[in-house]
Amino acid sequence: MPKNQQLKLGWLFPYSGIFTHLKKDLQQGLALGWGDGRGDIVLAPHPAFIQTGSLRDTEDALKKLLLYDEVDLVMGVVSTKVARSIIPLLEQRRTPLLLLNLGADIPTSDLQSPYLLYNSLHLWKSQWAIGRWAQKKYGGEPAINLSIYEAGYSLHETFKAGVAAAGAETVKLNIVKNFAPLPDVRPLIQYLIAQQPAHAHALLSGKEGELFLRLFNEQGLHSKIALTVNPFIVEDGLPSGITDGTAMHNAITWSRDLDTVANRQFVEGYQARFDEYPHAFTLLAYEAGLALAAAVQTIPGKIDGASLANALENARPTGPRGKLSLSTRPLQTQMPVYIRQSVIAPAADQHPNKIIEILTGIEWNAPSLITQQPFSSGWQNPYLCV
Image (tube, rainbow, N blue to C red; front, side, top):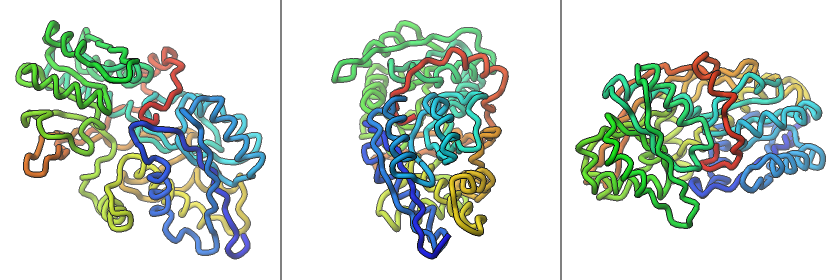
């Protein structure tokens, strides 16, 4: 590639009501991971807004990036369901897409292509792990509590598979519709009061999650029912008064407090450069930047889509979660899962997450999960940016 030639990078940005500065956060994470990259390459961004991430909006934006802007690489937040449908377009144009998502859906065997790279938090994996962990610890019949939005993904199904793996024979599933502008999770609290399960799991986010925890505490359920939660309820702290110091547990494949050299380098470097804490999507973009920087180092001459796809597929840099593998042939999901305990720290008015256990979790192609895949819904809206 000639000196200072541009590598055209197409971005796919959806709207997110949870991660309100998603575009900026992704670009900052990538910039930190890319670093100096390769000195003779300049990344030239070509952003595209894909609304709420439907298949049609994503396809239209992708066609513009590939056919009009003629980008060398596409990167962005795409759901697993949509990704399966756009593989033929990527292969036709011989241009790679590096997919970033939280992994609310279980991957499937047809999510394979030399032009599809995949970097995810794999929430489905951590939901299975926290389900199994909670069932082994508390036993009895659990209750899963969620809104209609979370019900469109695989998260409650993998939690159910996790508690089943630990011996649960039945599980209560409580769903609230919440299509109104203001969230109302009182029905979930009433269900729990009536059911008195051995333990409860809250698959809620944003204002719904905050309101649920407040009511759970006010009704005294915190002293009667053990609670596990979606990690994003407690990721960045909650206002005081939400809980009385009762421990809540959650599971995730990356934690800001993970005490490794690579993670400290990422967190401290991000804070120093951007004066804010990184979150899950900045991590995913940072890892993508590390992989891209490593990949271009292995391409001796001119970079095109095919050579870049091959280089990214074989790149193995070390990131905050360990060795990276972006290949989908086959997809690797062998990262550990961290069980965290969240207890309010009154002085800091925060809910720090302390890692109390490290688990291996389950792989996407395990027989007990494959049986769930055909029943996955057609939900494509990137609520939480899946």
